[in-house]
Image (cartoon, rainbow, N blue to C red; front, side, top):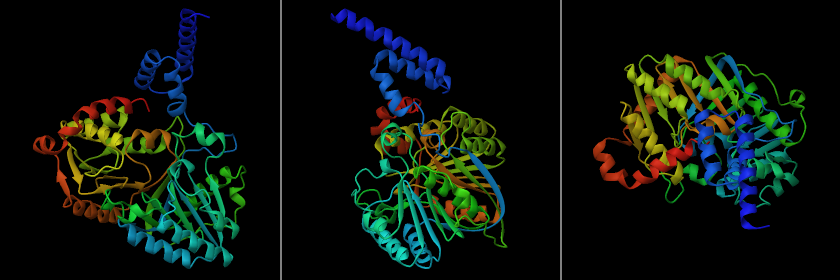
Amino acid sequence: MNLKTVYEFIVVINVLLILLFIFEEKKNYRSMLLWVVLFIFFPLGGYLIYLLIGRGILLPSFYYRENEINLTLYNKITFFNDGRELFKDIFLLIENAKTSIHIESYIFRDDELGKRLVCLLKKKCKEGVKVKVVYDPNGNLFNDKHFFDELINEGGEVRKYYYGIYRFLNFNYRNHRKIIVIDGLVAYIGGFNIGEEYLSKHPRITPWRDSHIKIEGESVYYIQKTFLNDFYSASKKRNVNVDSSLIRSKVEAYCPIEVATFFPNEDYQVVKQVYLKEIYNARKRILIQTPYFVPDIGLLNSLKYVLRQGIEVVIMIPKVYDKIISYYATLEYAMELFEKGAKVYLYHGFIHSKVMLVDSSFLSIGSTNFDIRSFHHNLEENAFIYDTNKIKEYYETFKNDLYKCDEYDEIYERKYLKKYRFGRKIFKILSSLM
């Protein structure tokens, strides 16, 4: 077979793959066009890239895969913005746990913090407490593969969310949730994973600013149910509703919360849709804290629209990056909205909070970054808070964070960000492939 014949064969196969992509794919047309361009310029290789990072999540049928929003009215919540305070509180509750400890974390480092936690979990297993852990193996690539062995030997149940070939097939689709539930009565969700960097102990990415909430009350049931759905899916079975730790707790404090559970689904992105609704309903201001500001075209246009209506839009991003490619795209999108009238602030350190606050009526805290990956690809868990007093409480935290920021303007661009300008354009385009 000569080279010409090989080339013609590759072209035919590539055309067939492009046609298959066009007729089967459900992505938006802008994203589809960029993928087709990639297929044309990189025959076969472009399609392989698509299969790895653009195809969509692929899991066995018994995996739980619903998008849900569940509203409850009676809850008590506590905000945590510092890792030391958060983990002190978590360790105390785990120490006093009586029946069950459930932990789901995208990152569960085998560093000192992780070892302390596993040591405590082993102790609780010996006391008869049921310990269940779920983690994303692709978020923990460099962990000691025997890290959880001693916990398992003591009776702890540890599951990788993806296993076998599914770990490779879903490398781009992360279980990004951060859930801890103690005795079915108290739940934690937010931005903190388990690792020393979340205590501001990373040599470069510091100080670390994040947001987490502790919830007591009716919403804990739905957070617990999300955890058990993931745990039993990873265990290749479904018996969530008969788990004895799935209980309905009550408190007297009135605090309306919607718990939003997102599983990657091309038909409905639950967190994104709520964000769009709240942005368009804004009357005065929209405040966003995110480490990665890479909105899709719908969210980008919604923010441009409200800016034209005179709504204040404030975006807080890190001054110190953890992932350079994401940071390039974040800067470019933030600057695009700055040109439309948004205020952009760069936090002195790394801000990992995933927060959106609208007027005094809506506050979102959870694991969802303001980026395409979180809105379309990752498994996420968020709390939408509608209690005016709690929203005002976090608004004061946001205002205090502004004192630890540099405000972006043209002078700041020339002085500090000019070196990122070329990469920003490239990675903004690439982000649309997601």
